[in-house]
Amino acid sequence: MTAGDHLDALRSYYERAEERERLSRACGALEFERTKELIMRYLPPAPAVVADVGGGPGRYALWLSALGYEVHHRDVVPLHVSQLEEERGDLPIETAVGDARSLDLGDGSADAVLLLGPLYHLESRADRVVALDEARRVVRPGGHVFAAAISRWAARHDAILLKRVYRSVPETLALVAGVERTGMLPPVSPGSFFGYTHRPGQLRSEARAAQLDVVSLVSVEGAASLLTDLDERRQSAEDWEVVLDTARATESVPELLGIGPHLLATCRRGIE
View 1 (tube, rainbow, N blue to C red):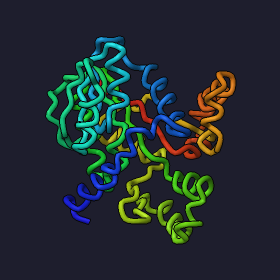
View 2 (view 1 turned 120 degrees about the vertical axis):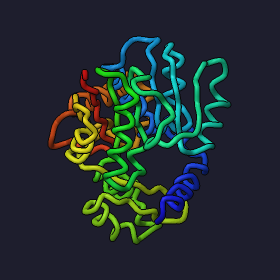
View 3 (view 1 turned 90 degrees about the vertical axis):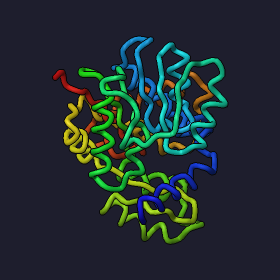
View 4 (view 1 turned 60 degrees about the horizontal axis):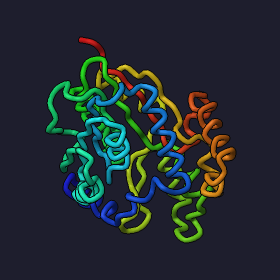
């Protein structure tokens, strides 16, 4: 697949407009809540400047702007930029189409950088390191970069074990071993999700190759991602807190890092 074909396929998938609501239900809601709390452990107080790179339809940009942060949002999918423009209302979020590998943001212009999507779709290690290096360039010395990746075992846990996609697409059973060997997650049908999946050590290595110090590397959702009743549990404050507390308690256990669908590396640019 050429770079142009890859970008066309990426836009084709996201122009289905499903990403806008994904973080509002089930495991997506757990991902959103956990990612927010992980970011807030290191984010400086508002009105610090945050670059939301690959920020999709802008759920994190809207959240941060409402808290008083100055947010600069970039995404490679034009639909996501227009969706954020529609939703931001009076919030002063600056947004534009942009590629994580070549940003129009100044050196050291942000206090923190969110990189919560680009690494999913950059299939070569060189491109992923370039995106991380761009995030390092944009963040000020001493600032943090939050880089998310899809776990190498997400396809087996989510598509096979939880959703039993093999019932409608039998070939997924044969594909999953290849995903775990190579990291490449191919589309199983026209317009379906595709991307790259990381082992924890790979994500750490790529961040270091971009001259970033890895402060922490955690599993975002943990084993709770395998629960089929997450929406029901969200209706009970006690049940939802148990879900979140379990994710927190196991987030850094080395043997469990790959059990959830997402990894989050919190990285720091050194003082130069």
